Length: 327
Image (cartoon, rainbow, N blue to C red):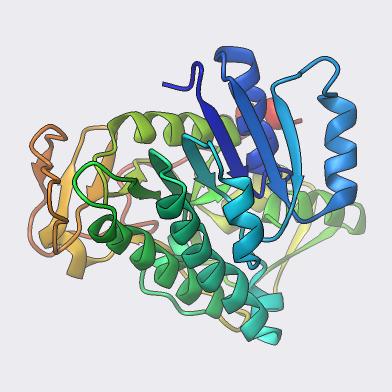
């Protein structure tokens, strides 16, 4: 699917972007890979790993998804877009709400407009479990973004650009996640936990990349793909990461949930089970799109997929192996 294609990744210097681009270089033969991001230092650092002299198919393109004109220029001749750029730190979004809106919502619409104008074939946007029944601004902006990408299929025509979304849980070891935070706190002998009942979904970066690739292969247009991944209590995670440390309950933070939901029960009527993942289909299908080829079995009415009601739980042994791979 990626061979001889021109692929652009927004947020290409982030944790996902770098790993995804590495996978493209190792496993596929793309004609062009465009790293689109706004941080010149991160682009410089990435160029030390992937210099153009050794990887002539890579282009480093400075720009911000807030800048519609720059996106139009960057998307020229592009076949596939993976939209990974986002402002995702919950406290920062709460304190700077409109900055989050400008990146996560207005930036998403800019990506859509540029894709339509430049006749991109496929666009896959990365979402988050926080977009389902959002409690904080970050989750609310990503829900808006998801809605924009799903609805964009109505504007592209029967043979035009196809837009879909992937939504998954916390990525093990990604920037801002709890595991690097716990690693830093180990030296102090005490790990702060907001609530001992708290649960979260967990996925490795490699699993996330594989999920994006397979979802792009399956996508018809308008789906929100959700992987079936394990849950774990945060307190159990803390005991696995640093069994020698004491645990201090500090109270839940503003905008934080006890448990994460990836398929709300109100979406069950539009959700199908595809075996290794769920897909939430749009309530209103765009003209020219049929989901017959996607297959799947409709879930029961009232079904929800939440981290506390999950059928699969991560054991300490499994987490240790994942941490070993991460390290």
